Image (cartoon, rainbow, N blue to C red; front, side):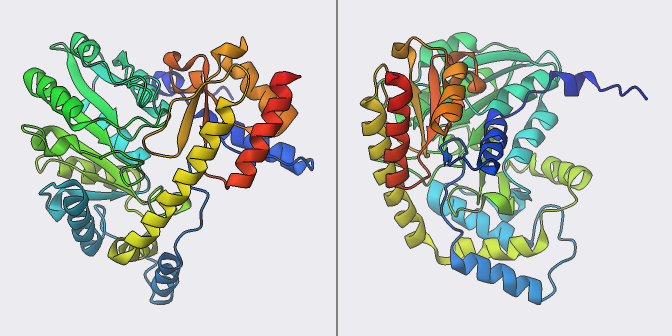
Amino acid sequence: MAIHTTALIERMGTEAAFRVLARAKALEAEGRDVIHLEMGEPGLPTPPAVTEACIAALRAGHTGYAPAAGLPALRQAVAAYVNRTRGTDAEASQVVIAPGGKPVIFFTYLAFVEAGDEVIYPDPGFPIFESMVDALGAVRRPWHPGSGTRERPDIDALAALMSDKTRLLVLNSPSNPTGVVYTRAELEAIAALCVEHDVLVLSDEIYARILFDAEHVSIATLPGMAERTVILDGFSKTWCMTGWRLGWAVAPPAYAPLFEKLMTNSNSCAVHFAQHAALAALAALDDEVDAMVATFRERRDALVAGLSSLPGVTCDMPQGAFFLFADIRGTGEEARPLADRLLEEAGVACVEGPAFGAAGEGFIRFSFAVDVPRIEEAVERMRGVLQG
């Protein structure tokens, strides 16, 4: 039987980190020791209080359906958390709980983008941003988000991309893969452009609590932006809950029902008992979050120092998230072949820069979500490849 896929699926891209992970797992099955610097997960355990709350929810019988938009108590808690950490004024009715952050990306595109619309998105950036542009037959308008302290976002370049066909601007601060965090002044300039051109913003703030000597500002708090910004956040990164699959959207009041409708049509609801565990995460775990960020800072510094010591490799200093986007152009090698060699020859899993957009050629993304001794070992293994 011939299988005929739709044009939408044919245009859709994928996420290279999972390809690298699959190959790394295959090597481990053969007995190889692999250092995992490829995946976008914290590499730390879920806080015990969260796990215990989940067990209690299971024992209490919270195993059925939940409301499509999420448990009312969790929606209220998320609204309070976002208001406290961002300075917004969101109501619980604006919050929709989803099975991870990716559905919020999907829902925003499905609700607001049609074929022929122009979408501005970060390049290099999270690959699903570009994938959804292509899937819907929209028009790519990639914009370089800057790399951190050395290279800042080019607001003039962004202004040149804006037109009456621009439907959506995607922001990600702190950024995957570059670690850049936008300043208030930069976001004020971006907000003015969005108001001028009547552009909706998807603000991916999933790494908002993982900051190093930087301030996180949500564009939703700036003049004219509350009514045109969808905030994406979730539990995966801040509370080390990647496998729990819990994210959320905070949408303008007029748009939140659209997200609830899309939840009903796609997932019915997020996992009921996991939502009870999420309440525990929001309740009183700020100390754990602060400790996690301090651990990441130590790992970041070790990886920056180590990679900077390798021949042909330079690094900007990530201001947030837990990724380092290393410039490998000085090695004379292209990103994909070198990343493959590092995995196959050195047992170091990492992701080639072009997986995050055309502007990523000449770069490799490394996660610093493993401990310092493993980072130092990875650096020495890579030194052997580059000097060999």
